[in-house]
Image (cartoon, rainbow, N blue to C red; front, side, top):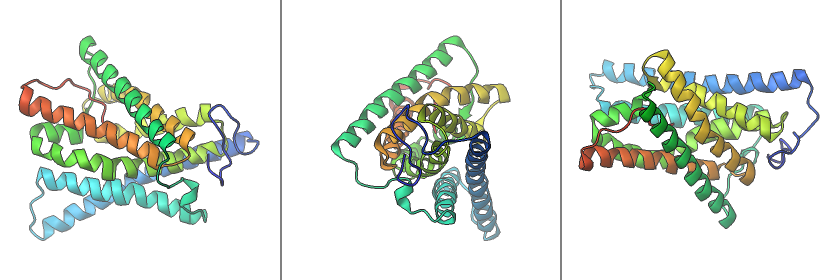
Length: 268
């Protein structure tokens, strides 16, 4: 993928011949990094919440979302990713950070359409079949307080997309890509990324698992556009635009159409 990892195009071989031990280590590190991102985010949000309550500040739904966006997605995910790069003495070139070319913007646009098509199609299938799916906690707060959705729309592009993609594509997928071909590394990274959303969903365990299994579909698109572009900005744009569109549709449905949004909307 990158110059350090030595990965190539989709379907190509990994940067070096991988034995079972090195593959297992890469997978273990990828899972650990994904878990650390969640733990760091939860710890930061909890610490800030305790500090604010001790000073007499009331934690409103809006403030709760802001803390989660800034501390969990921004500092938690982004911080873990940057610390990992520092630990391995890698710069940002490992994940690829640059202004996208025309071709890369095209990757982002096609990826956005593909991810949105998969996400909405999966939502419709869940709604039509009556299968119970988990509800994204941020979306649930937004449905109860529609004005919060107006914050989540730009935050998708400025914080959610960049923060999550930096860790889960730039670091997790890249770490797997060092030892595995893209056709294996991308699905594994997508499964890890979807699985960590268990903690951001509400509902019965079986309902959460339904959502996780469906989240893999648009997540695969993020992994593919990253592999094709070797530029973390591209999946960040795709991811951010995907979420921003869903939050916009949810806001319009709640405020103007009077429609009840379908359950199981696939937010990240």
